[in-house]
Image 1 (cartoon, rainbow, N blue to C red):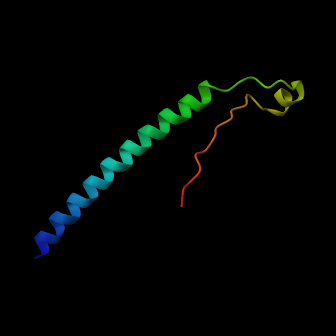
Image 2 (image 1 turned 135 degrees about the horizontal axis):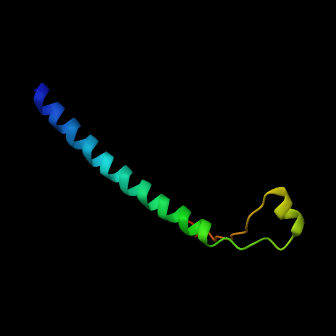
Length: 64
């Protein structure tokens, strides 16, 4: 019985590892796209304060 539980735990951990890896890669692509789409600030004071760009993203509303 101990080997059976160990095999299932191994399978679950491998699947979890693959899912986390896919999410990590997707998040990396998202943040690269976010950085590449920044528009320079129009306010010269913002640049001096360290603002390097603006980005507007709309979030889809959740339906209940």
